[in-house]
Image (cartoon, rainbow, N blue to C red):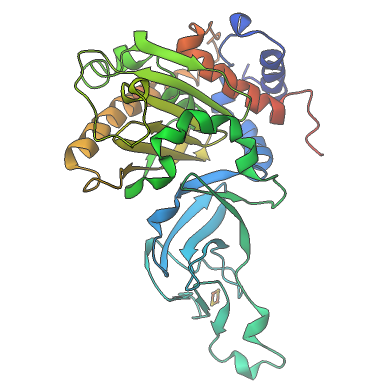
Length: 376
Ligand code: FES
Ligand SMILES: [Fe+2]
């Protein structure tokens, strides 16, 4: 029998009420059920803060990109007033998508009947509509969603009811402040789709157990599994130190306040539900995850550089492309395995290696556990 949504929710509640030592991996349905994904979309992705990327990807007025978040079409644009907005990318006429792709525009003209909006979402012109009694462009604008910028990352809250994000992440700040995360300069963002559940990728990025085996030539010589150190979570984030092999050369230049310890590790952190980040002394790598189906995830990933450098180098990008290819191969075979009706989930490795996975279970349990009313 396939796992039912009720069984998945029960497993989350069991995790929440367990100690880490008792924890086992979640059942396959947690990662493969379309019904459970519907719940995640409604309860997590529409109600919580969701990261859409680095805010300086749209650095000048008119810079924009479009993206899909659990079926909502979004237009991220810096207005001519300098404010970054996340607008509904759905035309106020009959609902076509207004903008496509990314670029720079002062106006957005819907390609269906040419209703045209400014960079703040206000309707400016609508052909032949002056012949319609009472029509006034001033009455029509693209809805704007709530946004928050935290450490240079742009977050959106679709339902408008989430409490402010920054206070919720205050316990994370002491760990990341010396890495100057907010000051990092956008190098590139790329959109790709992998055939894996969004949580498989979130867990994978945030656990050090796989590093030696999955990345023998890339990350093992740099951040070996044996040097990972778990960072306690308060339920809003997960994190670990990924220390560098002592033989690995220095990764400067360094942000000015970085301690000697911080110079010898990458600080890996995830902001629940969908942002995972590697803050290395000289580079920042981020992935924003957006579920596509239960078996596929849309990823906006990119790299940001220290302000005192010339930006992200080809060598740094090539290295991450190789690491990503190694992870993608594993996560796509994992996803096939998780379709099995006979898989019984196993125990997690020790806390330094997979404690971060348990922290994410507990976050999901606070929203979707079977002891939580979904109608509140
Ligand atoms: S749907 Fe956009 S102009 Fe008609
Ligand atoms: Fe990996």
